[in-house]
Image: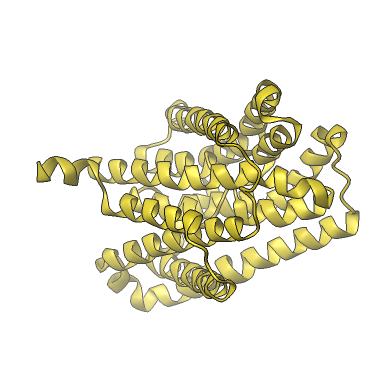
Length: 328
């Protein structure tokens, strides 16, 4: 019995569920949320410092030159996902309402995450160098592509962001990627000549930081959403319907990226990177960009599908990452 439980119940998954429920059900004071948010930022910096120290520069350059993997991630993020989200928004509008359906469409236009995509690729023992390159390029291009796609596809839904606001969001987002992710990674690359062998020999250290960072991200996102009243006024049936739409989108994207990776001729490690980077959407980019793109009265409703999908992708991909790691 214990063996069956240990096979199917991962303590990390249980921890994510506990943290998720805690953020939803327990009122979190502003001071505590500030502390956890700051701790999450520090954890992300430490995580990418460790990635830089662990990966050889040769592997990083190989990841950048891998046009099949990088092209697959960009195609999944900015072509396939937007098309699926547009169809899902049309089909779900009768029971979600126009506001939430617009949020579903907006979700599909966002870039990939960086932190969780890379962390789950690492947990699953995939191509971390390729994931870092792909997720970073996706996030950086998304600062331009997401607003353009939103203004093109959602003009009828009231997208009327000010150009100056959009520019500031784009520059701020790129600055955040450079300072919080790429700079620590570059420092780690410099240090890996001396500490790389030690870091590679102590993989549990990186794994612990991987998982701790994900738990902090989950808690901060859910607690912030609860504190801002995102769930107020939503009936349980609407929440269930939104979860269903999100689950279908995620399942289709996971299948498309995994089997599409085989079609592109990628090996298992690179298929894992495509799976993790191509199926996710960035909450950190999506929320501030929504504030610039949409009227203030519509931002809360449009943000709900992004928040729901973000939590779902973390839980589902953590399970998948563990199963892929056990197979290797």
